[in-house]
Image (tube, rainbow, N blue to C red):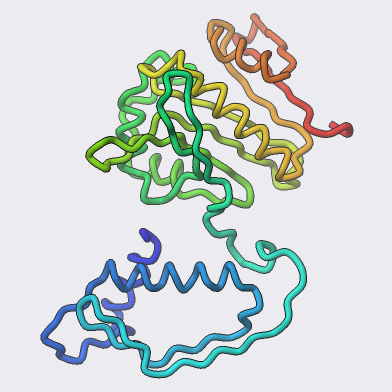
Length: 263
């Protein structure tokens, strides 16, 4: 929806969306939802070879297609590889129940998660952030948060654990990331959990989720780095099958997990 809004607002400013003096203003969120739905149809139906909608009339929440033509053709092959940019991988969404009985949703991160991600980081202690980033982070600005939430799903994956409050508002409780090399063989992982939510099994859930994704993506190896005093991460990595190499002189711990026999 965030990307659709950029498109719509830009089209209005450039005059590509023409306002004909209707008394009812354009409902921008409604038009964005139409574009997202249309895009999802194209993703789900690779047989769609050509689609022309002209014109589309918008008056408030009312959208009217006056004329449309659709051409289909047989399609064989990967639905994802035919696309220039990999879309949001909705198939990775799953619900999980934690040790405390609360149910969370695991899903890929979205561009519109920026404010929620900011609130999440604010509930992570300075010590945990230092262990994650190997430096004093301070307050993340818009550019840093955009880099964390607007990702290329082909080379990077970030799975967020979200919880829906009774008010309907969504919170991020943890995030696991994989960043692959250009050959898509090795990837570096990172896991971060809200400091006040440790001990409910969230770290283990996120770690196993990102490992399973790495296998599905055809990666050969997952690697990571932490500090010797981060016993929680080291213990978790060992439980998940990682080999541990403690380098006290450099103050780092290397973690490696082969995902294929060639790694």
